[in-house]
Length: 123
Image (tube, rainbow, N blue to C red; front, side, top):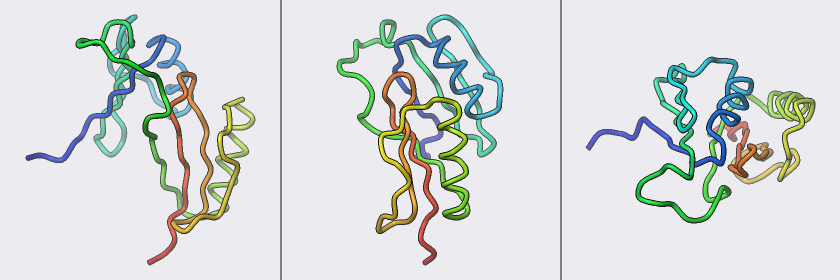
């Protein structure tokens, strides 16, 4: 079986979420419609934002059932990203914190999906 290379987030408004992620990621989507927006990241990973009302079969529940994680180089990068995202008015679910896996914080996208930024502990 191939490794997964596509993440889908179910969102309330694909166009609004598309604008949010375009600003956050600093890139334009490769596909955009009222019900679906897709980004291709530098790693080749694809991020799709699919309008919850058009997903088949129907989905139940909302965000906060998982998280997108962004690994950065060090604790200073975690703090810098946190400051940047605070300026962008992202909701912060967890302020910068030292955990067993490294320095981290968690923000929320407009649909409540968790966005974790972390600097892993060196092995």
